[in-house]
Length: 284
Image 1 (cartoon, rainbow, N blue to C red):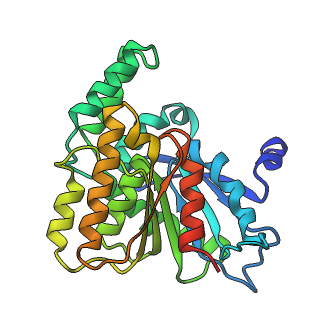
Image 2 (cartoon, rainbow, N blue to C red):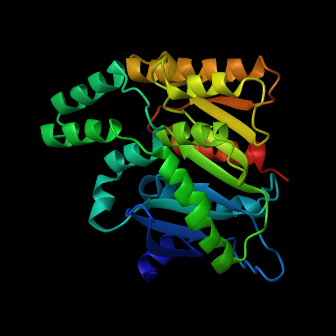
């Protein structure tokens, strides 16, 4: 990492890797200050949407030394996109973070069109964004994280054998729910921030029904933002309502899922959601 970036993201390494499916990823690995794997092997916490999330979440590694509320040691592995693809991270994430067969909600299509009308995206960019949502592969991305990337992190950074975590926000939160419901055994705790369960016909609800009472054992922490629920954007209203429905269906089955309502918008809620996950699932 360059001197400039090292100053912004202390104790952070960066490398690029290609998945067996032929996709290129950028990976930031942030270790606790003075980390020595020979004496204190530490679990990894995987954070998706690395291009957007690493600057907001990696600095929170200092919470491990907070004398007022210390967090269990962890190595943060932020996963994003590399090279020229990095500038298209907001549409490429659709391919990787959305479950296969997830319906494209009308409210989301309307929100993308609203963005085009407001000049946030060109027509070409808007069409490309929606195109990625029609061919989604969260299953392949989950396999990449667990079967390809984690063994490298384990080898190069001497991680602990258990206690690993996963955090995602928005569509990353949708991916977190998908990973949890898929029964991945790598993660002991999972944070799902404002998960993008936009439609009532989401695959998440189908997966819940398919599991019946055999729910995963990993801890799950779910957050939403009050401005999503109380604001005037339908896509965010639906997201918050459906996240609450997921929560209620889990708790009605006796699953001890933790949750929080944060005083944020959808855009500003990422860091607060990650901190809520740390405080709830990884406190000492």
